[in-house]
Image (tube, rainbow, N blue to C red; front, side, top):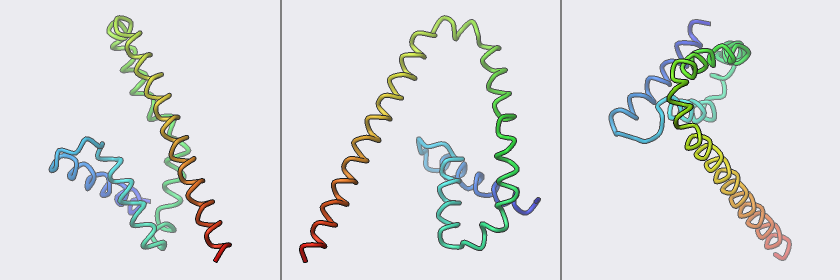
Length: 122
């Protein structure tokens, strides 16, 4: 289990280092997870070594939201002052994400269907 946690933390550290070094606008843990995904695609044997620990961590994921809840309570006054702006930003970004996903999915579906049609006509 220690080896698996160390592996996950090393990938997070690499992501944080890349973000800090290059001033990237992407959070370090996201870059670390993308690098871990790439590594798992290239070396599937690594999955067997970290799967049990990853599953255990995911089963306790709700505990990671406790600090966020405390932060909300600590900054409740500020949130109440800026609540409308926060709600507008969350709703707006959610709608944009849904629209971007729909456009991307439609593009990929059309592209796949066109490729299948071209393959049938050959």
